[in-house]
Length: 567
Ligand SMILES: Cc1cc2nc3c(=O)[nH]c(=O)nc-3n(C[C@H](O)[C@H](O)[C@H](O)COP(=O)(O)OP(=O)(O)OC[C@H]3O[C@@H](n4cnc5c(N)ncnc54)[C@H](O)[C@@H]3O)c2cc1C
Image (tube, rainbow, N blue to C red; front, top):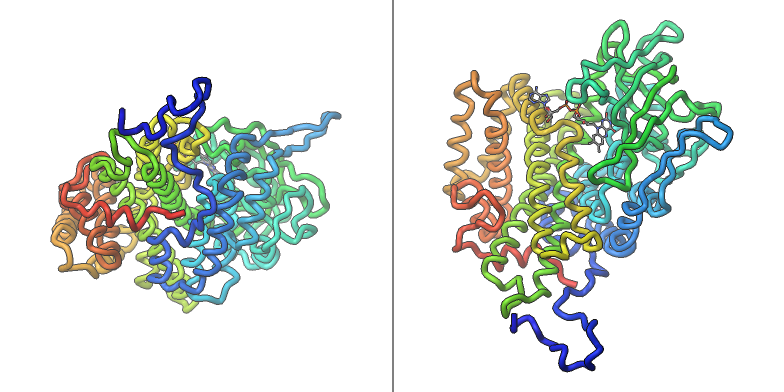
């Protein structure tokens, strides 16, 4: 251990035992956006350079109090449910630490929930993705209601009079947590309640019942009775809820506070005691004749709410990339300042392999998320032009499912490996790494768990076989530039030749689709050091199952240098 001791205790007075050395300096004052070179490049590449200054300003803000304090405080002081007041009246209120509200205000004021719906810029989704990826590095929990508020808009548009009433409120840039009618506040936060005890993936099993009050139909008033097993952000102003009608499963807009200021019959039973995501309340609720209005046609609940679900899945991909970025920042910073066995960790050959592998995964996820965000810009533009199966729309549909599966699956082990780079200190709460680790599996479960996303890829391919051609055309833009990638694409094409076993093999096929897409994006846009190592390890069979198994000839220094933040 001689090499680690730069200030031996004997140099101090004998009672002086608390000399701190060989520790990384606090990572403060970081511009979380500008120091993220893979993201900065992706913003330009995908056509949203106009947001760079704004993202840098947000990056500086996030690197300050939000990252250092608010995220910690909002997680350490978990939300508390108050079901009743002292007199026994139901109040169904969740109390949050002030840091939660600071984070929410930051998210709303920076238009993370609204930019694509209010901006005239053709790349507003791409720009928002950069802002969201930057902000989520402060803390992940508040991004759940921010995402749902963002994602509710396209679903609301299925019912124009409801969109006219609510779109301005959910895209407002002020945050007001009071339990008063949204119209009085001038803003609204949105949630969703689909999952029930007996089924979350298979929402057709929902038992919540909606009874019409005045004849029923699209836009009409109903009373809802039932339970929901997961309802996150239960202090939201409105929820999209699925419930059964005589015509089948339908979608409803349910306000928590009624227009007259009274509370809707939306009763919170308890809050979930979750693995992570502690800042955010997730609840079980019961609807005891709650007032709601139908969104979309009767019996078309799933196609209506799927517009919301699709946009939340996009955010799962962006969020997974954000978590990986935070992991890389922490791991490389620590390793750059910690010595063991005579060398700084970042200079130890085996640690360089681990760090470079983590950087590669993070960079590949960032590239994927940003390309996907651009697909949303293009697909929405095509929809505005009256198209419903353009190349961009097909790519968006398929790549969302592929990306959600893969980025979210890669996140937990990535967080764990970055935690391990810190040694024992990474296992201790105040390092922030346990919070990152606990958060990591959530995006994979929420809004379509791993198997469900794999099956969704097959569904997209069945519904529109041309989507595979579009997907492969995107991947093959890199054709001829990397032999490992070319070989992997050839193998991928063969994977579809035996439809009888495709469902059983779905995970493997989706994994290969994701890796080919990531490989293609990296080959086309990053230095050879990055794309060569990625393709060799992930596509060419030269890497192992764990991180830190890149081929020995990889340019570790160049890979790490692109991702390591400098403060
Ligand atoms: C922290 C948190 C917050 C949440 N917030 C909300 C919320 O706000 N609103 C909301 O509506 N829901 C919410 N959910 C619920 C979440 O969306 C569901 O848990 C998820 O959709 C899975 O549903 P389930 O739990 O019923 O599992 P199940 O549907 O029972 O699935 C169990 C497992 O079976 C797999 N599976 C399912 N079908 C198949 C199949 N055909 N073939 C192979 N495998 C299959 C799934 O992939 C999964 O791994 C939240 C969940 C969590 C953890």
